[in-house]
Amino acid sequence: LQHSASLCFLLQVGFFPSECVELINDKVPQSVTNSVPKPVSKKHGKLITFLRTFMKSRPTKQKLKQRGILKERVFGCDLGEHLLNSGHDVPQVLKSCTEFIEKHGIVDGIYRLSGIASNIQKLRHEFDSEQIPDLTKDIYIQDIHCVGSLCKLYFRELPNPLLTYQLYEKFSDAVSAATDEERLVKIHDVIQQLPPPHYR
Image (cartoon, rainbow, N blue to C red; front, side, top):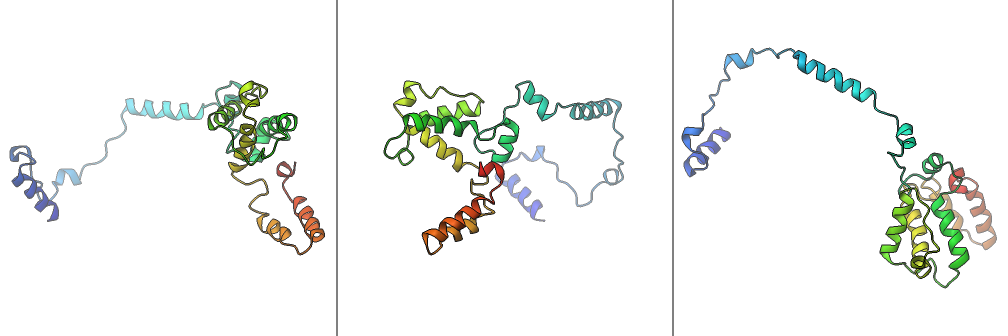
């Protein structure tokens, strides 16, 4: 009834010309209710077979990587998964950045001050493209803080943080210990429980 009323309203106000609209009766014609679905035609059957074959013959992730079609993400990728795919013990992005900082970045606030956003994004793109950027370029030497910012960005985007969600409560308890000595022992104990990629 509601649909009929709406249709009548539309006809009255002129949204649809009445000669273009055929009102549907309450009863659906017998021919529609008794119709049997048509069997899949030969043409469609061949198409379905082709699609199934195509889906089954898709190259594996490993083959796509070997051909250089598929590239693994560096940022935002699980630490253990990234190291397994890259074959490294420590992410290359951290290795390159820390070596650079130890050589050029011993300045006040290296991890406190932010670098220029465009330089950070440029570095991120190069590492995500599986390239090792030349950090000795003037653009980076003059903006040492962009390298420190990139390290922080890498840790911030880990799906499971460096100290892991699983050990969060234990780390929290450890830093709340009463004395420095007790705190040190507890923190050392929790660090030993980290998964190997996170521990390294």
